[in-house]
Image (tube, rainbow, N blue to C red; front, side, top):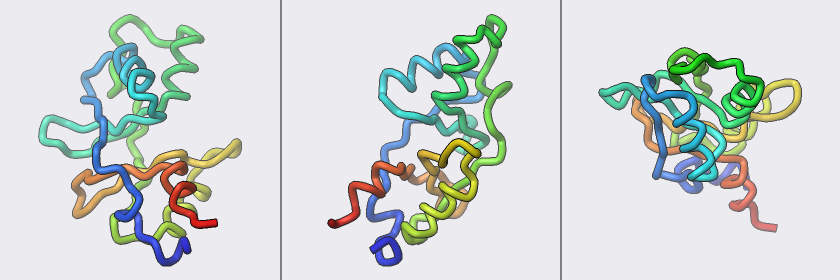
Length: 132
């Protein structure tokens, strides 16, 4: 099943993003409003330059680690793990596991086609696609 289905079959094509200049407080509010766990960071030209997660932003906001005016660019992860729309779901699951932290997996992967952001695939998307 995971070998047969492709990322493009289950990914969300509507991707909520944030610019690098966004204040971390507003980025966190966007994550909470849309009930998502990560935000791809894109520059003015639409190029993917990083990613921020609800876990990282929320944890650091609670601990008051950010100064007033801290931007997404200052805290984002620059090395973004991604998949292609043509990759199969087994590849996506492998990357989620392989690049996750010691405590777990990456919950969402951005989907790039020729370096262009075309979607996002979550662990929930993959689980929903499995026929029992």
